[in-house]
Length: 258
Image 1 (cartoon, rainbow, N blue to C red):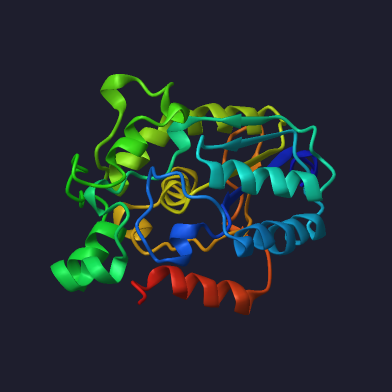
Image 2 (image 1 turned 90 degrees about the vertical axis):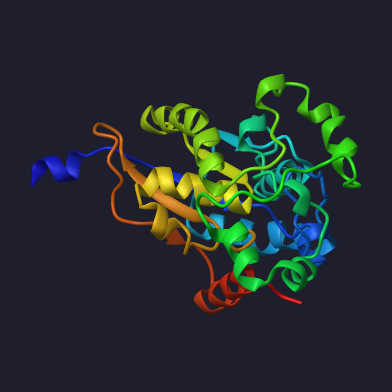
């Protein structure tokens, strides 16, 4: 019994960015650097931040991708917590999954061409790879020539990715972050929908089949607690916020939409 009371634990917070312009337009976004909408900024300030505060969470470091919607969400949360001094580490390996030639198209538009089953397979399937982006796609060059991706090794710059490929991409950076957590660093990871799912798979050690059913709404903090000595996850994820709001937003993410 004594050992339980003496056990040192640390919490990790995982968060998807606020609503982006492509979220609002229901378009596949991937590596396109879509900014937050006004509502996305509001979600960061009025949904995520209060939930974090009410749980008395604090941070020593924040991890983001190099995409603006990820970094902006983190900056807004830190500013509203009066923690603007907390260092933010932007890592290209935490970028959203590359949606290939689906990038820039509305999900409903693609569903009308290929069928809903195929679109849901591309969105949620583990090994389903969308067609690679080609030079005719209006976002090909804006992505390829964006200086925020200068650190991406030439041989690792994706043209498309499955969920499984994204899981593999984030594994090395997750191992680095987990070690920080086990060393006592209080970490917020503010990233993207599919990247969050990829991290959930690593954190919860769930199957390929199970992760396909996980949907991540914008700006809902997802909290994990770890045994700092053993590295074991204690219990499951805790989503912070109003349960009905979370349920509604999760259902919206799961659907193809209009």
